[in-house]
Amino acid sequence: MAIKRPKGSFLEKNLHIIFPLPAVVFVIVMMLFPVLYTLFLSFTNWNLTSGMPLSIVFLKSYQKVLREPRFIAALGRTFSFTALAVAVETILGMIVALILNREFRGKGFTKLIMLLPLVSTPVAIGIVFNLFYDPTIGLANFVLIRFGLPRQAWTGSAATVIPSLAIVDIWQWTPMIALILLSGLASLSSEPYESARVDGASEWQIFWRITLPMVTPTLLTALILRTIDALKTFDIIYAMTGGGPGYASETLNVMAFKYSFEYFRMGQASVILVFLFMLVLFMSLLIVRMRKSLEL
Amino acid sequence: MRAALIRKILFFLVILAIVVPVLFPFLWMLTSSFKTQVDIVAWPPRLVFSPTLQNYERVFREQNFLKYFTNSSIIGISAVSLSLLMGLPAAYSIARYKQKRLSMFILIARLMPGISFLMPWYIIFSRLKLMDSYIALILSHMLITLPIIVWIMSSYFETIPIEMEESAMVDGATRQRAFLSVVLPIAGPGIVTSVTLAFIFSWNNFMFSQVLSMERTRTLPIAIYNFVSYAEVDWGAVMAAAVAIMAPAIILTMIFQKYVVKGLTMGAVKG
Image (cartoon, each protein chain N blue to C red):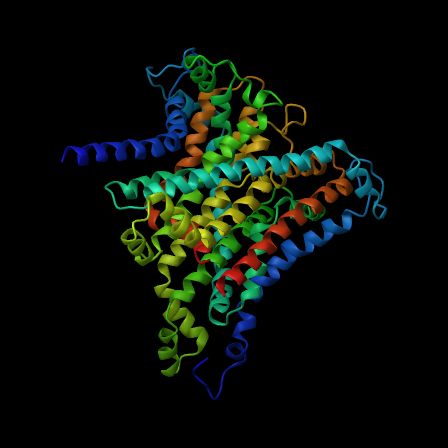
C-alpha cells in the first residue's frame, strides 16, 4: 500500500484476512471437509442399506473397485467421451472463431446466438436431443433416410451411444471455445500480420506461423477448462440414457452417482470419486502451472 | 463489383452455416411445444401444423410447474445474494492484496466434481433432518455461485485503478469505507456479469437438487427430468416445459449479452 496511515482500526489492519474469511470458511466447511470425508469413506466398506456400522477396510474397497470390469470400462469411456468431444469442439471452435474474427453486419447477433447453448439447461437440452434421436419419430433418422442412409439407433445402441452423447456436448460447448478464441484473436496486435503480408506469406502460412502460436495460451486454457468439465459430464448423460443401454454410456461420474444414490455402496462410490477427483485435480494443477509459466 | 457481391453472399452463407445448427434445437423445441402429440409423432415430421397452447396449459395447470419455478427462483436468488455478501469482500481482498493462492483455492471449488461433496452432504443433511429443505439447497447452490462471483469480481476489481480508493483514504476514509462507497458503486458492470452467470448456473443445476430435494423444494431441472421417466413421453408437454425452463436464462442473456460474453471468456483470455 502506498499510503501509510498512522492509526488503523483492527478491521483495517487485518482487512486482507477478515474480508476473505467468510468465503474461505464456507468453502472449507462445504467443500474441503466433505472431500476429506469422501477420502475417509473410500477406506471403509460402508453400505447404507446393509444397516451394518461402517468398518475400516483400508484398501479393500480399492481392490474391489479396480477388479470390477464395469469400473475399468467407465474409466476408459470417460476418456474417450472427453477426447472425442473436446477434440471436435477445439477444431470447430477454432474454425468458427477465425471466420467471425472480422467486422461484418450482424456480428453482435451472431455472437448472441452462440451464447444461447452455453446458458441452456443441460437436462432440458438432453431431452430435446432425445426427441431428435428417437428411433421411430426422431428427426435424426428422418434426415438419414432422406440422404439414403440406414436408420441408426443413436443413444439406443452401445455402438453409437457415446458419439451421440458427444454430439450434444459438442453442440453446447463449441460456441464457448469459439467465443474464447474470438476474444483472444481480437486482442492480438496487427503488426506481425502486416509484415507477413508484405513478405508475401499465404493465409495458410500466416495461420500456422503467426495466429496459432499467438493464440496458443488462450487456446490451452480454454482446452483444459473444457476437458475438466467434459470429464465431469453428468447431466446430459444421466438425463438422456441414465448410463445405458446396459452400462454402455456410464462414465465415472455417472457410475459414482449410481453407486452412492441408487445402490448406497458409499465405500465403493468413494473409491470411484477419489479416482475422478485425482483426474480433475491433475488437470487443475496443469492449469495453475500453465498460467504461471505463460505469464513469465 | 460483382466479385465483391459474390464474396458477400458466400460469407453470409458461411455465417448461416454457423448460426443455423446452433439455433435449430431451440427452434425445434419451440415449435414442438405448440404441437399436439399427434403432430409430434407424425412421420415424416410435420413442419406445418395448427398451433395449440394445450401443452403449456398442461405443464402449468396439472404439473404444478409454477411451484418449481418459485423454488428455482428462491434458491437461485438466495444463493446469489449470500454469495455476493461473502464473495465481494473476498474478491476485493484477492485483487488488492494479490492473494493468488486464495483465488486458486476458490477456483478449485469450481473445478471439483460436485458429486465428491454431494455424498457427504447427503449423509450430513439426512442426519440434521435438512433433506428437502431450502437451507440445504441454498448452501449447496452457493458452491456453484460463490466461485463464479469471486472469480469474475476479483478480475474486475483489478481493472479499477487503485488511485480511486487512495484519494478517498487521503481524505480520511478507512479502506473498508473506501471499498463500500467508492469501489462498489463503480463495480456495477462486474456485479451484473457475475450475478447473471451465477444465477444461470444455479438455475440450470441438476445434480444437487436431484439428490437433496424432494417434493417440497424440487427445482425445475428435476421437474422436467421426472416428466420423461414415465413409460410414454408426453413430448409436447416436455417441450413446453423445456421452453419454460430456458426462457429466463435466455432472456437474461439477451439483456446482458455484452457482460455475459465477457464473464464467460474473461478467465481464459487472461492467459
